[in-house]
Image (cartoon, rainbow, N blue to C red; front, side, top):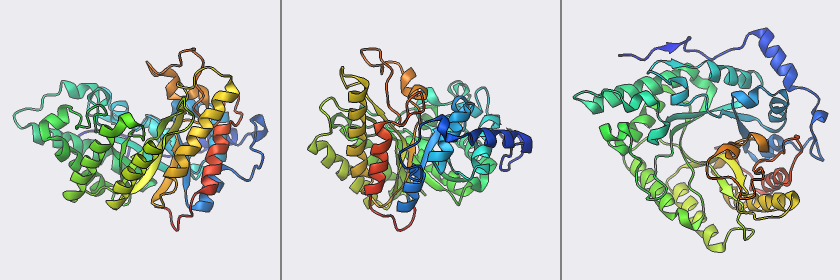
Length: 387
């Protein structure tokens, strides 16, 4: 059975009138939102001077806000769709894929001159695969059935977008953070985890030969994350050993602002050791989903919390930006109120206050976090060329 894809396999375009209206709205006077002290020092401008792409994730809800689009065009030269390219979104009820929502977002990005990343081809946790997969009849040869489903998914998505996607998150979050072991789902049960992940990358290379191919995960430098880091290294080493066409590791970088202020020396040393091992495999690095969770900053007014978030960001970025094989930095949301963290169960602050994880507040005012990112970019080593 061949997966059907609605729409032609070509770069999506918006109707001229629709795009003109969107672009005009995106270009509203930036005085409607506070500007940084130096309007010429947009984050994308600072990044370009150092060979760093600077971007953000945008989804249907934020795309509907003209102010948000304007802010993104001001600060970013790169975009990624937040959810709209994911398998469970484009194919929620059957293998047939519908790219309408992602087409609209990426067409806007293309016509606005943004670099475009693809996120993600396969999200590995079982709960984030399309629901129909759980009850799918894999028949007497489950490995062959799983391979066919992956061929249809990855070939369909990669060929639909062609060369406009410069970088794909091919596999997302394949390691169980509490144990460091491979996550289990219907595809890994049919094929084996490493075989399945290897196939995903080979299919992506076959169907998007121009693109940077990325394994993306949320390991971080906290002491309680050692097993997760070790599991990611084990996976990367296994893929490299078998010649899998993987180019890069995506560091999601959903970091937290520690109650103690900044990270410990031991945590920083472990993070540097981890990044050294990844880089030693010949892999590039990206920061793909940056924000700062402030739930552990107890009490204090907004100014105190914002200062703690900014300090944590500068602490993390100064170290991570020191790697010259890191060529991309993307936020996972520019405005506090639109952050995914506001809606994540079990993550809320004990005082029920809205978290402040983004570089701009709900009134589109720049926060200390924005300046911390700008300062880290200014201080990073020059890249001779973008990775």
